[in-house]
Image (cartoon, rainbow, N blue to C red; front, side, top):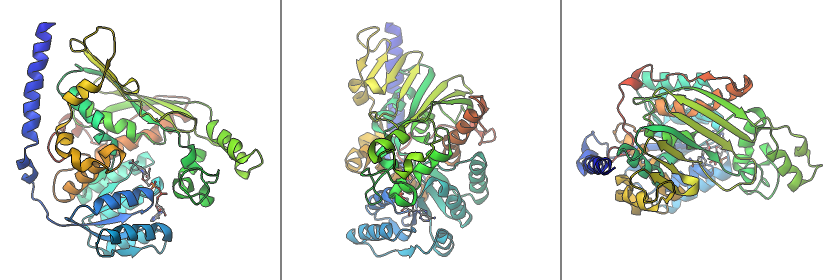
Length: 452
Ligand SMILES: NC(=O)c1ccc[n+]([C@@H]2O[C@H](COP(=O)([O-])OP(=O)(O)OC[C@H]3O[C@@H](n4cnc5c(N)ncnc54)[C@H](O)[C@@H]3O)[C@@H](O)[C@H]2O)c1
């Protein structure tokens, strides 16, 4: 036991030295840095406005153009820009394809896309084809074909397509990534993640406010109720996998020494959304006749090339506390977020008992978080929005993206493949190798320098 602990201490010290070196400021200048970048926003709804507000804090950004088809959302976005003392951007709001005019007419370095899911793919493709880098909200695409399109166009245009998966930067997730890399968990065996969030008041509202107050959706709804709910009517699968799979991907070296090879998905019956409509709107409300295809709880089991399994859960239609369901388990220990608990053999004091995670979270706080803690505070979602936006901006300035198009599609493809598996009676479905074999040689990059 003693020998094991001293080996771990040695690894910890050397790895810390390594990560400290990796975050030396000189690395900031290891790429040719653009001092000004021109950014456009497509989609200035609730998410777009929040990221716009964060973006106004960066003097090196010129916010040249914004695009949305909703006058109210454009007005709110303009107010954010005006309040920040910046000049008014050019506005594209004429029709659903006005974004094409924006990407073709504006001399942009990058666009940030925060529109309904079905628009991410056409908007990202149009931007890259116009010579513009992309940061797209999650998920990046909805079908396997769309995933390949993003890869092919990113490769042929040499424009990056970053998925803005902010949960990769959650403080506890990054501390655990740090622990994984310093061998506290030993060889990883199993990870869990998911999206377990009661979204009933998001999927339905009164058409005026974003959260609750009614059971309207579609053209009578506001913000996400206007488009997101329809996905629960049309599709049965894990509709929102990236907040779960994104954070565990760097721990498992997905696309960088490892890859996901197949999955199965299984769905429960669909009850929660119908019940919510009846409970809140009464049995005679017109929406009480709507059939929802998406099972309330969808469980996906993924197998990795290097042996590990990943379980993802999608659970958004019933009352429940928020949880992304994280669990990371290896030959030497386990972290289980829902219990705020960790157990590391030889490190946790009491054998066979959970230890509160606090001590190790503090000890293994990621260097990025230590460095940017103050700036991250108040930036949204516990600080992680600061990091994802910063990673995007640094990439626009010339750094190699730490979350690239291969990551974007390997996270996003879980949805269509889980739908396919469910359609086939929970059959096993192969996961494409979007890197075309490059995963064998690609080196880990996320969280290993001071960019991200
Ligand atoms: N990463 C996160 O934590 C996080 C949080 C919230 C939302 N999101 C994602 O952000 C995206 C946007 O979500 P939201 O909450 O802002 O939704 P929203 O409905 O509030 O905003 C979407 C906006 O897109 C606009 N739009 C629709 N079609 C368009 C088109 N053809 N051209 C231009 N604009 C168009 C709408 O008018 C609306 O203003 C979604 O993908 C969502 O999943 C991510």
